[in-house]
Amino acid sequence: MTTKTSRISGFHKLLPEQRLAKVAEAVGLEPSAISHLSNTGNLDISVADSMIENVIGTMNIPLGVATNMLVDGEDVLVPMATEESSVVAAVCNAAKQCRSTGGFFTAMSGSQMIAQVQLVGVSNPEFARLQILEHKEKIKALCDETDPVLLKHGGGYRDIEVRILQGRTGPMVITHLIVDTRDAMGANAVNSMAEAVAPFIAQWTGGRTYLRILSNLADHRLARARATWSLEEIGGVDVRDGMLAAYDFADIDPYRAATHNKGVMNGISSVVLATGNDTRAVEAGAHAYAARSGQYRALTQWEVDGQGNLTGTIELPLAVGLIGGATRSHPTAQIALKILGVTTAERLARTIAAVGLAQNFAALKALATTGIQKGHMALHAKNIAVMAGAVGDEVGQVAKELVAAGKVRVDVAESILKGLRD
Image (cartoon, rainbow, N blue to C red):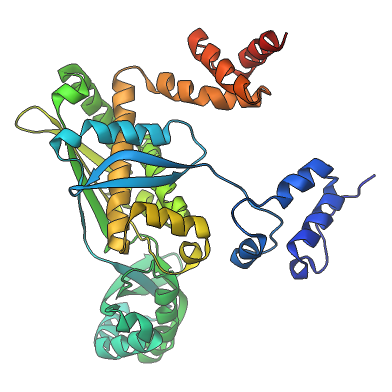
């Protein structure tokens, strides 16, 4: 009888295989489960152990490649890491349908990140704000001294913004350090700069500094993409107008916008993950940006041009990098970047924005025509077949019959599989 406890003394000091043995003993894992977790695939256990704490194995996610992407006149193959059916196929189809009009055209507002320093305990916040602004040159020197390597590569301090907020505990004076992080995502660099500047802000104003950390609402680092889909490719006026109605719904109703934007992020997060970047940071920034007007709205915009074609645009913060973190340490991320062929963080962000727009086009078109479930469930049928216990060639056979029956359910799959085996 196994006695389960979460108190395992010295767990973090153990080797990964020793940790796995401890967990297996605590919860009673079967030998097959231990063997499964011991197989870390193409990520060496020593690399995994250096990336996060208390490693016992890896969680493998399928890596697909989106084809047909034409971005700023260049053909691009886009690696996408996701567990959800139809995401990769949707991008492929959307990209194919706008190739005749030039594909995707992209731009970037810059590569600047924001670090925030929170000042409290000042009774005259307007006075303190000016005191901070008067020390811009000192702040620049402190920031650039903190990361000379970034400075060497053309990055570093660019400007400050000082805001006054009224909180429950009194006024806060918030200093924004605007820092160009170039090809790095930049979290560590800007956090270090905020730490260096904070004591001086407290000294100049007589207040107390608390939080010193980056903002994931990276609105100085906006990626933009646009594309045009002809009426012929869309399927006519009715389909176009149905897509516009679906977009209009998302732009005025937060309940719909949440799902609309989740679809956008299906594509964006898949590329962010494949390249070893921070999916949570990108998602937080995107959703915060969607609410910048005071209401949560759609991240994309859809219109009709003078010829009646459908035009789509997207703009959102995309703080991604090619330097540091999993982007450098994870071998699969390095290969994904090689497949993409990007050499700058800006190029990566612009391509990711194009993928988000493509994903949204595909979702809106499905909603306006066959409905989202028909295409998605057809591709999801293989997952259902595996859940029912199908293996090898059985997976394709069961999936085909599920789609033909129009009932993509586990119970139906189990019945079909039993019939095949009998």
